[in-house]
Image 1 (tube, rainbow, N blue to C red):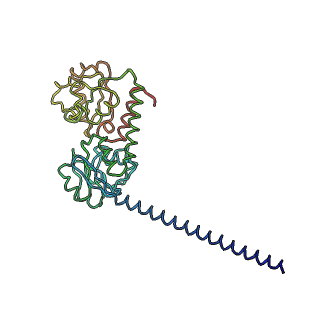
Image 2 (spheres, rainbow, N blue to C red):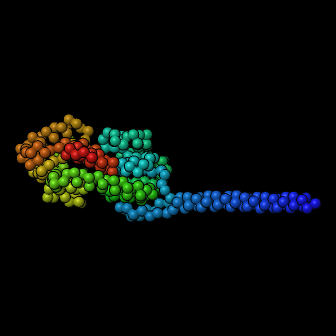
Image 3 (spheres, rainbow, N blue to C red):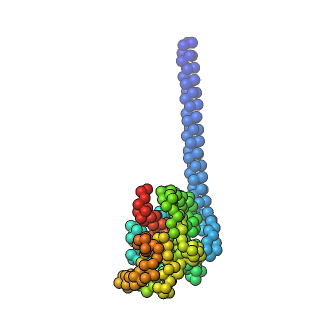
Length: 333
């Protein structure tokens, strides 16, 4: 009898323990499910907050309110076409390139098939509107007069000069909610600049001028696109060429050739009228005043390409220009 009582008692104890363990397991599962649900709610809440976050971006024509992260973007100048590619975002609309139409070859793989919405100097407002963008990137240089029209279509941020790629990178990083990525790109550029200057060592500074020949005239570029990058890289400019407010000058006559005097000249030719450009180039460079320039006498005139040195005006093209400098001065990275 006593043995049977012990067995029954043991069974009761086992059943009690099983009930406790089952209850605990159920509670743990319930708690776990509740935690997952709470995390999902928090994650969804954070996503909604991010999607609805309102940011104010200051730019050349004021301030623009942007809600969340833009997904359909139109870029209206070459530097913006370049920078949006560097930020690894595919726009829905871009403007046509100046040469190598419709898209510069170095950007073609990334931007081929994107809707062309006119030229940089004359974007097609109707075409832009049909794309229903949630952000437009414009430039003070080109689009000040149509800013209100662009803003009626979508929030619009405006870069300063088309050649100021650092400003373009800055405002686009803010507008696209990609500030960390933009900061990293700038850091990468600065690291490469520092490496170039270190490798050049005592050879810097070198005084350089930037000349440009077109079908009907010649130019000297001051502190435009290439001028800013050359300054970063440790080069100096002739007196009067270092004015940050001036892109440069059109030379009215060959008597102005001495204004290009420097230890070294970087020259690129511009335009599609190949024969006329070549004729202008020969006429000017065969003039005695050209032959008397220091760089010419010392065989220090270097021909470079227009796209990376001027017309592209972006972050990726800045690295292409640095590629040229490494090659010209026979420096290995």
